[in-house]
Image (tube, rainbow, N blue to C red; front, side, top):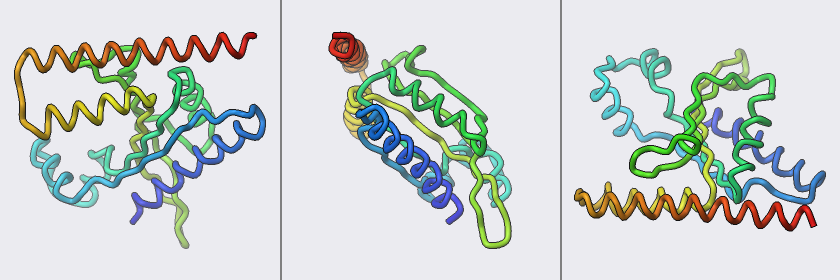
Length: 189
């Protein structure tokens, strides 16, 4: 339940930012917000893979992705804008940042991952909780969702398939940049 509360806190922060941008600048940098809570089976599997003892304290200390929020943006520059806005908030502490947009994974995966710590306020205490925040464009999310279905769910593993998926990731990254350039051209007219 604490992790669900942490997800609500982070989602609320993004909803407020999106509303502010809508009112102040007549644009919404956020297309959608998705969240997930890692399943008990997935938690157990990760504990076993990492050889972490099973205890509430170890889970809270060592697993940083139990609570997850994914922010989908139309344009890559909105990702960095929202990251900066989130990290300026005085109750958010950045623990880890991995920029797979600037440095894509070898398979072509692109996303910006943050592990942040945010407080949740209970009736008698404040508790700091870790939340993984992923930022993707619509194209990045489309590619990642389909790549996961095709590659991981079906168990297909061959070089031709890997290369085709990587090519698709590169094409979607080019599309992101082209769409961002079009938006910039329109705004500068």
